[in-house]
Image (tube, rainbow, N blue to C red):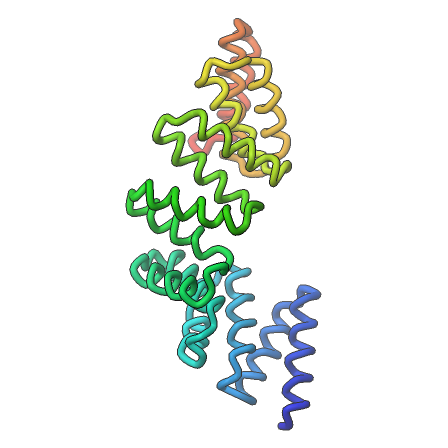
Length: 247
């Protein structure tokens, strides 16, 4: 098949991907692989779809093949590193992410994923350094701020935790769980209970995950108890237990 025909297959498959027809997109990219097994574009697109669908084994196969065909693609080393993080192969992940940064010091998510590895290993200062590096390049990366806040919370550094949670909310105002942990930070710091209550109620409205909503209701129960509103506290405990896995 001519190069023009290969380009047409790629263009059609890419269009299917953009409109959300992933089965048709995958079929097109697989066909392109058959036409030109050394064309890394098809492997990248298939790997990208597999990542989106959380099929990490398939994603790993495709990104690994790209790094074999073209070792100079920083983004493919970074994506491969992310796959290894999911596979909990942290040594391989560290190798690929480090290589990605050698090729492109501004590659997105590489510092973030290195930070995840350091967290798993209990290397808190290294994790903080990597999250900060990610944020210096991409300040809008709100998960890095939330994860930093979590580390500072384990270190009982409530001021730094609060700053990161507030920044997280500025970057992602609809990120409900950040409101919940900011409310807990205020409670633990002896702050205004009314402020903590408002933040918790907003977090519950914005959060979709049942376990986090339950956590929010338990927070409200604590707040109402501290306010001397035992009846409202009991109602919040009842709502939390309805959502808790053990209930």
